[in-house]
Length: 65
Image (tube, rainbow, N blue to C red):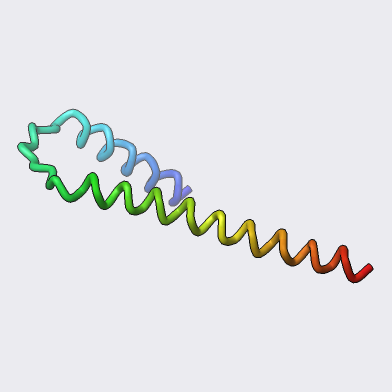
């Protein structure tokens, strides 16, 4: 019963926070785009490296049999 009460209070605060949103005059740094590209590139390179290691492991196991 206590958790349900806490969830109701949280929901009320969440709804109130969306109703009282003010404009945010934010600035996006030009380097942020470069950081995003670096993240995407490193993810794909890491994934390719991992796939290569996994395939090499199974290839060695298959050749031993």
